[in-house]
Image (cartoon, rainbow, N blue to C red; front, side, top):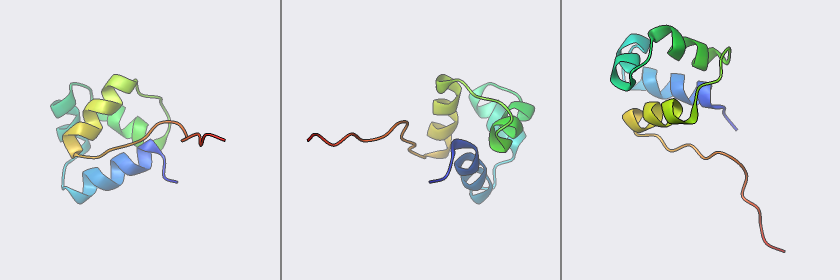
Length: 68
């Protein structure tokens, strides 16, 4: 399963959006986007949610637990 940073980078590039453009859209810095994509920093859930919504991507946190 791909991690958040990988999904963010692939989808951002697929849509032709630069790190700086995405950062402006969600209210952070281009450097922060780079850190998230490289897995060097942890983003807040709020900022991660904003980024994914702008890109139109759903990302599930956690695992499904099947009832026994």
